[in-house]
Length: 453
Image (cartoon, rainbow, N blue to C red; front, side, top):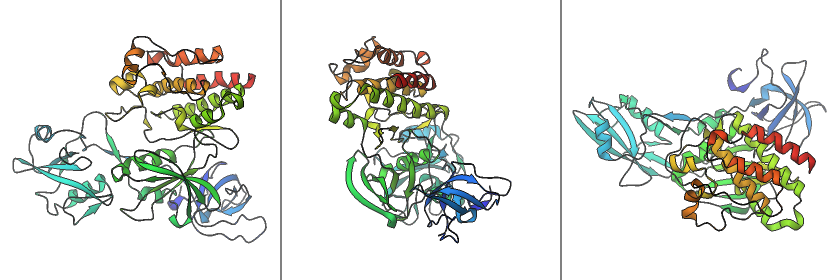
């Protein structure tokens, strides 16, 4: 691939490749497909001329486009922060920073100022502690230099002490699971930036701890727009978007882009495809048994298993699979949404708030998340689906759920649930993660059941 995302003569874009307009293209013949800068296109086929491709716009119109006017979209990568030690005390930081060589450093969460950080640096046998605080979504030590994230702050003070006791010379790397940072400019380079002027906000669809979701319009296309209201969650918000840049599957909600052009300290928006029928749990509760057929339930089960099998093949763990995080399209297809906690399967998740009734015992007790903990959650989602949106463990107090489950308790089959579906639920709820079925196997079984429905 040549610089700027353009294909070289040796490397052709295959059908299905997503590209984005770098310039406006008006077309010179009726076979051409006009588009504007920022338009999202999908390659349909290569042509004899390596500089031209047949492509499809979002409105499904097809035609020829010049490769030099578009850029292939690539995945946005997270950056590890080996020097970030999370929630440790001042005393623990000083204990770790031995021997106290000038410039040895680490960063931790601030104990006295939740949401802020502390930069701990060794100098002349002592440890200096600098508060890193937030201001308009940016980080600063001295209110003179401001940084988008911790990585940029570290890079700045590695090059120059700039008011610190010494420049940062050597990081004290954390042992075990690493945390991650992301640079918003990576979204622009990879072709995922959406111009704010092209977004029109519509009705509020819902909200949560960190932000709100609206329907809206992007260049004539209906979209969902997730907004951030908690400035402490900027990195988690961008991490969700970065995971989505690497995923493309008919049963996963598709990312369209990220709006970043408000500048540092301004709101960030994640823009995804809009699924008109909303989340699965509301869909089930509002329609009930009179409108939802066994065939619909079987197809929803298969659709979610298909999307999760794709994540499994990518070695990604969702961590929050539930009917509330599955959306339904106008055509009645189910798509998995909300990748806010998705990470590679090799990483545990320390601390945080977990949805107890959907989370596997080993994840609750030991933060051991895996594709098999997602399988447990899938079993709970199946129970929601076949009980038409009831809350799981309806007769068990929340505080007692984990103890009941570890003692062998399992929910009874929902009324009129097919025996073969309830059998799948119970297999998903095996106390031993290694004995739970893989999503690839579940998809095969449910595809057969859906065909018979």
